[in-house]
Length: 350
Ligand SMILES: NC(=O)c1ccc[n+]([C@@H]2O[C@H](COP(=O)([O-])OP(=O)(O)OC[C@H]3O[C@@H](n4cnc5c(N)ncnc54)[C@H](O)[C@@H]3O)[C@@H](O)[C@H]2O)c1
Image (tube, rainbow, N blue to C red):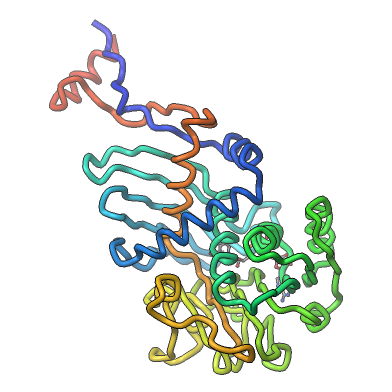
């Protein structure tokens, strides 16, 4: 007798990198960024019902490997993600990721997905969703400091969600700026390559910092940041890794995802433990103020939180059946008689 065919539940839809890219093109990059932003905003609105924990990080000299779990009580999700700033010197990416959703009721997985592309999309969608709430009204021009892998996604999300139409780009490596401008050529943005970060700030109402350095870095100093600006700082996302001078933090109203994680990993790791922050979910559900005047500097100290990945996976899960951009993986051993796992193994050898 041969082993019985696995049941339906044993097959888990798997979204490969190739299928993720097909899905993005099918939906349209900007439409998908808007869709992700809506899902993330919805989950921020129901923030209180989620299981929350700072991510579980394994640090090394070269970088970090992290697990990011959460659950809304019905569905559980986690992401595996790394951050290795030196990787680009070996022709490898700084950040790669994959993630999984499972039903809380049975523990059976329902989705396994690549998340390297999806993380860039969700990070950008989160940044832009936050900027929609905090940036000065009518903001059109953004400075992008750090023109690596995340930068084009950040630019397009700010365009799609906030109406940004002008970019001022700076990177210590001008080849990165050339690459980003080439990639963004067809998206109807007006772009200027800048020789210094100061030059990039000129006329910008939003500043995005997305640089990668394992050490404390000072990408922005206090004198570079004028009144009324919104800063979207996403590159500092690990202990010992920051981008802003602490004087900027003292002058800003700081908004965060999940304080226990951000106090370890974000820009505010430079500040005392009781440094005041506003939780972004409270701004979104109307229980805390966002921007209150035109001169205020608002700062999103974005480190990336598990709920944003959960939202992104939930979005993908909702779109794959209709599009067919997935493969079924025979991932869960599922014997007919649940107590006869060994018998299933024996029968498969015949
Ligand atoms: N907050 C989040 O949710 C989130 C998500 C993804 C990535 N990140 C972080 O964002 C950062 C950027 O990620 P990436 O994938 O784009 O990395 P990347 O290595 O592809 O690009 C980083 C760029 O920053 C440039 N750079 C380094 N130091 C600079 C400086 N002093 N001034 C200007 N440019 C400088 C590099 O030349 C490079 O082009 C990383 O630190 C990553 O960990 C955060």
